[in-house]
Length: 288
Image (cartoon, rainbow, N blue to C red):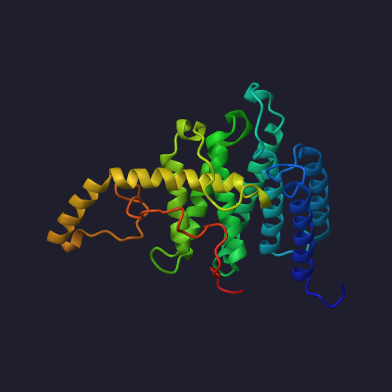
């Protein structure tokens, strides 16, 4: 495609494969949910296509282009991980290899952004969405994957680095970036093993398409748990507000990310009425 900028050509190629992935794996007319019953063979086919894009463009792509490719690969893996699983020992699950590959992909995506922070602070909303998606993905992996399949320390470290980066590039207290960090911290610190085993359905509008369930379920569980904790911690907040009224100097910043009993419970979450943090309408980045 002569005359087309390299990044446009790369993004178009990635978008084409992503569209094919969605159509093949998420729009099955013979399935009640729209999900392909046995996605693994097709996942391997699309893995090959994405590898071909990487081999072709890696020498000329930008950090944002690499993020787009890794995001596409992560979405591909979620079609396997979101499937209902039969009752046999977790160590025998055929998706364990996908768990390892997907956690590595999500970590690599965040490593790119922490290595090239301008890609996030000055990039488009789509780069921020990819970062959010990867963090939610890793939080879900931490909560549900067999420990032998993942590097828990490595995952937690890169999530922490991403938290710091998003906090640093946030423009005002409680903007979308800082809200995303708060949601992630709620999920990381307040969802325990028993919560993951409860049947908490995704409360959004879509049931299966676009492989969004795997991470949307994470947000839904986190917000449900946060609202419960918010109500339980109300007496503590009332006491704190009374003390702050007597001594204004003790009022803490709304942007404080320390996890005390009232923070992040200061932010009451309503999943039903709020925008999807992964698919916001406005442009969060510095350019469009």
